Amino acid sequence: MIGSIKRIINMSGKYKTRIEVAFIFSFIKSLLQNAAIVLAVFLIDGFVKESLENRDFLRYGIMLFSCVLLQALAIHISDRLQSAAGFLLMSDIRIKLGEHLRRLPMGYFTSGNIGKISSVLSTDMVFIEENSMMTLADSISYYFSAVIFIIFMFVFDPFMGLVALGGSAIITAIGEGKYRSGIALSLARQEQSENLTNAVLDYVEGIGITKTYNLIGEKSKEMKKNFDKSCEESLHFEKCQVPWGFAINAAFEICSSLIGVVATILYLNGSINITYFLGIMLFILDVFVPLKVLYMDSEKMTIMDKCLDRIEEVMNEAELPDDSERNVSGCHPGIPTVEFKNVSFSYDSKETISNVSFEVKEGEIIALVGPSGSGKTTLANLIARFWDIDSGEILVNGDSIKDVSLSSLLRQISMVFQNVYLFKDTIYNNILMGRPEASYEEVIEAAKKARCYDFIMSLPEGFDTMVGEGGASLSGGEKQRISIARCILKDAPIVILDEATASIDADNEAAIQSAISELCRGKTLIIIAHRLKTIRDADCILVVSDGKIVEKGKHDELMSSGVIYKNFVRIKNSDIGWCKRKIG
Image (cartoon, rainbow, N blue to C red; front, side, top):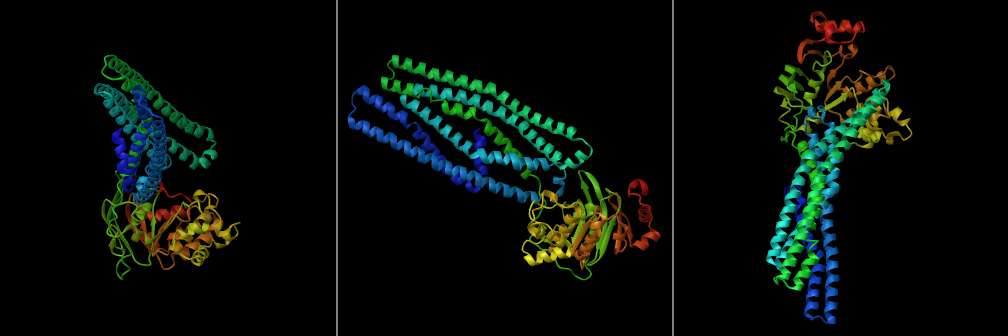
């Protein structure tokens, strides 16, 4: 358990000193807590020796009152130092975790880790924030009190001190067994908490599909199963701790009784006087109380230990290397804006991009076409360095994207996705994300260019209208236009459109196509699309299949010499979906 306490202290970083100062006041508090008993021993000694005078009672009263005041002050200072440190510390850790998540490859977020991240943020960190410093303060105070009581026993009689030390060792051994048991059980408990978070997220995110197929009951059963499992794990945790608690209580009673028996024997043998005997009797029930309370309430420490494990597990995930301070160079004549050189990339040990090479010149329009799962979106994401490639090289304006800072690279790229995500904030702030330093007038102008100004102004609060989480309060076309406004405001030289018009209704299509035209004016454009009219005017069409570029050229060239692309056009003209089965 001391190891866990050290772990929390070492985690405290710049707040470590104030926590250590708080320990000093915890020690003072522990001394003062027992002052009343010490004063009582001196009073008994005075009564026995008949040496007390009236002024002695006043002196003892003042001393007792002073001890109470100083104890209250020590408690206040200790709690203030440690409680504030706990909240400040967790605030820093949250910011550090946010920075860390920002640097992780996208694969981490698409591998079923969203529940883990949510659980760490909403459960583990909150538990540590609410309990760590107070539990730490109490634990240190209990350890100090246990040491002080043992010293007092040695003062009364060396043999009594040995009895107190031996009893403390027995209770500590049982308590450490309880703690180790709790550590093992806490892992399953916290993992189930993550499973429950995953189940709730899955249920909420898929509620539309669930209702459509009348599977509310089935999905509710699955979520209820996770709630029941969480309840079972918590009850199992408590049940397994009960025998240990019984053992600690039994050891406490036996050791306390043993001190009483030994003290009586020593008094009857004349080894200690009546003053010491009565003093020991006053202390008898308090000698082992600190250790008993410490280990009886050790569950919080065990859970915190596993919470720290889970936080560290996320923090230890490998980040994308981003040590360079270089910015992406400007455009140069004759140097491609984007260039792939023999690029290969694997995801989950499966190669998804294989030895791909192509280049995009400044101002060109490049279209990527191919069946679903062929690697089109992966190629686009690799340009933004959402993942690092296995081999080869990707260059932007002649600079390898691994040799420039990630923030500099992302300033060069705007991306419009098929599935738009808007944050739970005002429409104005969602657009402003494109360039946070932009003026109000620039935001309004971007909205007008994206053909979303009119519908925004028709809303009750205009640009101050709050958007539901994910943009749920807006239609797909409205969300898409706001995302385009965001990209127009960013004004990056490279624009990537990933199926930006694939699921848009006819009423919104004209407005979105007009907005896209504004976005792409004078830009280098990479389009991922299935719609023939979106790609037929591209400067070059790259046909992607199984992670490879199998054909490339302009529309007319591919129609005369291509096989897969020509088949794609035939399929589109006959309104049949693009799939591998049709083009094989």
